[in-house]
Length: 144
View (spheres, rainbow, N blue to C red):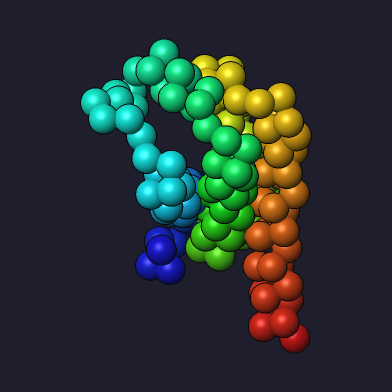
């Protein structure tokens, strides 16, 4: 991304790449979770009714993995966007966190998770801000 000269294009690309890498982090944690709590044979992951029925059977610990997956998406994706962006690392990280939050809300509406899972959603913004803050500090230390 360093070869991209236009800062706007670079920032947009950083957010897109951040969302992609964050999604990979999310899926890695979810895949680990499915090793512990396997999905039923023949489950269509793209059928929201089947997925809602499956997730209704999951224990609270499985939801802890889901929470970790979502938070890792916001943090890792936010950090990647902040790190690769040309400017405004905090804003880029927060854009990724907000988009992750929107996806989380849409998922929660479709899958009806336990009520306490709604508490995690504002944390997407907190971990996204933390990721952006790390890059702000790194850049400040390099400038000094």
